[in-house]
Every structure is written in structure tokens, then in C-alpha cells.
Length: 134
Image (cartoon, rainbow, N blue to C red; front, side, top):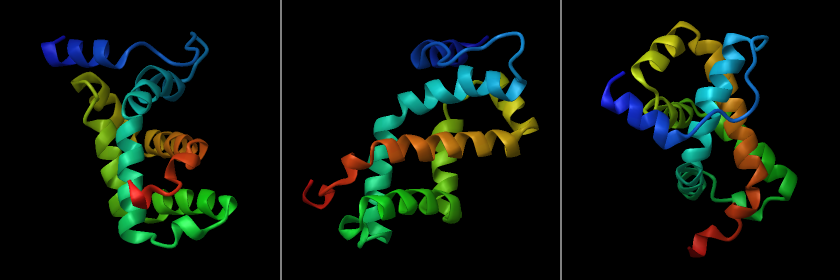
């Protein structure tokens, strides 16, 4: 393993969630790779979404709580450029071996990645209140 890979694994920390011999390969990848990266990159995802709503969703702040949750989900699911930028923030922290696993199962892993990211942002929707003044 090269220095970059060692650094990334130490920097991200260990698995989040249980991994057992009965876990599927996607579930193992999710808990050992995706969850630690999503946790590490959380502040960047928050900043990115604040920028996104400032640029493209100016009515976000006047919406109800339920509408904001829908807006978060729709922004990531329907805006391909934004979704690809978010994927890049995650993929950039893969080791070379993890990337080779990812490219073989990118469709199912992307789905897991975006679902977890949507839920992460929705659970922190209060951080998007009145961010115009910040």
C-alpha cells in the first residue's frame, strides 16, 4: 500500500456500522469506505449545499420544513452536475484499490452514496436556516 492509501485510511478512520462475514460486498464498502468519507466531508457538503441554494434555490429559505427536505432530495437527484460534484468529493478520498472496486459496481455504490448523503443533509436541515446572512 502506498503512502497516499495509508494516509487516507488513517485520516478517514475505521468502519462505521457493522461489517461481518454475512455482509454483502456493497454493504462492506458502504460501512468501511463511504460512511467514513461522508462523515469526514460533512462540513464540505454543508458548505456546498449552502452555496447551491444561494445560487439556484433562492426561495429555499421561505419554504416549509417539509418543502426544504424535498428540495434537498430533488437537488441531488435531479441536478446531474451537482450530483457529480458531490460524487467527486467522495471519490477523491478513495484509495486506488477502493476505486477499482468502485468502478466495477459504480451504479449500486452511487445509489448508496447519494442516498446516505441526502439523508445526512436532511438530518441537518436546520443548518440551512438564515444562511444568507452568513
